[in-house]
Picture 1 (cartoon, rainbow over the protein chains, first blue to last red):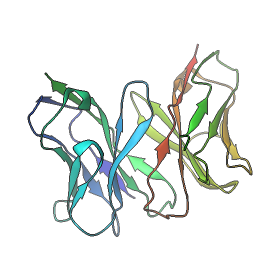
Picture 2: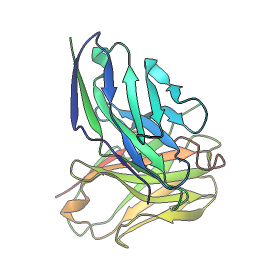
Picture 3: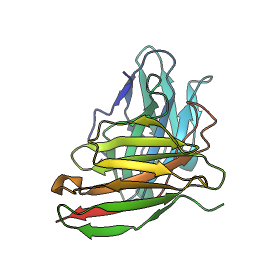
Length: 114
Length: 115
C-alpha cells in the first residue's frame, strides 16, 4: 500500500533562513507525489507535484521539492522563509492500488519567526 | 473560474441526528473527493466520485454515504451522528481525466460539531 510519512510535527525557522519540510514515501511502482499547504480555517492548496522527469520540482510561492529515489524522499524547500509561510504542510501520494484516492501524511506545522 | 464551494461552512448537530454536506466542484471538473480532517487522525479519505459513480471508498462505517449528481455537484451524508464525527469535512475536485497525476482543488470545508 502507498504511504507517506512526515517525521516532524513542527518546524521552526527564522524569517530569511532556508526551510525544509521532510517527507518520505513508500510506494510500489512509480510515485506520484504532491505537496499541499493549509492556512488556518481554510482548505488545502496545491503547491507542487512530482510525476516524472527532473528531480527538482518548482511550485507556487517560491517553494520547490527535491525527489530522491534512493532515499525515497520528497522534501519541500524554500531558500528564504517568510512569516506568511507559517501554515500546515501536507505531503501526499496517489494510491496506485486504490486508483483514485490521494493519501496524505500527518502534516507538519511550519512556524516562521520574524 | 470559481473555486470549489462547500456549504454549509459551519454547523452544530446533536448525537443521533443526521447531516448533509454539499460540494460544488470547479466548473468542468467531474471528480469529487471527500476527506475528514481531525487533529488526531489527520486527513482521512472518505470516497471519490466521477461522473456520478463512486470509484473508491475509504474505511468508514456505512453511516457515511455520498452521491454525485449529473452536474458534478456532490453531497455527503452522515447518519446517526456520534461525538467522534466532529471534524472538518473537505471536498476536493479534479478533472478526473488526468489519471493519477492530477492535483486536487479543495474547498474551504464544512466544520461539523456534534454535541
